Image 1 (cartoon, rainbow, N blue to C red):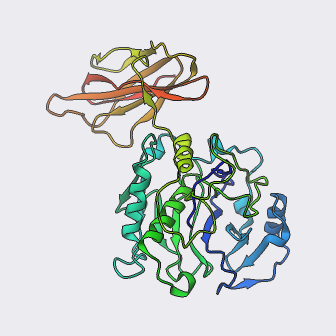
Image 2 (tube, rainbow, N blue to C red; image 1 turned 180 degrees about the vertical axis):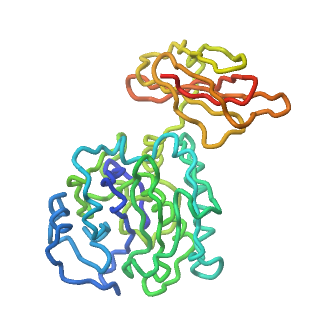
Image 3 (tube, one colour; image 1 turned 30 degrees about the vertical axis):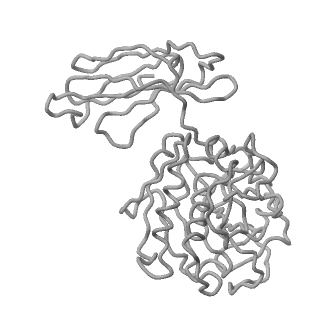
Length: 381
């Protein structure tokens, strides 16, 4: 899917309670070898119509419904059991600001390690393209674990002939958990490395919540699935990697507005000298209760937006959000390992993020705390 992220029409999808909504990339070729059948009435068809899709734009296949020519929906009505109308993409259908900094990706054995169907170099390049966006905290990591956050694998002949790949939207603060690739795209046409790379950037964009930039031109409706426009992007962006119907495009980099969109959703906070805090740098042994307090003088600061973050040196899965508000309340509790076995100490890093009243995000410098013994931090309130 050569899709470019977005313009004003860049919606980072409202993942329907979701997972059951897939984004596909097709080349708009009307000829497909997929098994299409006449649409029959069903509870799922009724649900799709209720969500705002026109019945004549719903096509039934063996394992899914294809809507608007590009969206795949599960045929299992249980997938639609939760309320859709009370969900907001900004909070429920994006990757959390913590999780987006470390998303693991596993390339399954179904993707060959050589030959024309080998997408592995393109996957690595696409990950590097997304990881190196200046001002964004998006970070994917290749993993050897089959329980990684995202699994990239062959579609196993699920996708229509003219659909090159498919992914979905975030759920539960996590990226969508799979990307499937049609290794027989257009009856085994040779896909260039540049096109593979383009499509992988596009699909990973879906996994972190980006809708097609040209959704409206393609006739994709928001319906109750929803779509939120990203500020400071135009109505259309022909150079966006998140445009739909672009499976045969070649990679030429992100558009200006692609970059704006990603940095808007997942900004790397700006560190300013006036973003300061005060609190203890050394804790005595035993369980400790302590506070750190905002002492900055940021203009137009929104103090209610302050989030305190913590990581243990040599710990895993950090940083964690463990405090909110002008004063952060913390507690040191027993842990199973030292940060520094030689000195038998646990060493912590804390910082906070804050927004001004116009929504710009900033962060404090890192503050170091040392404590004797095996300890970790928790929020005490």
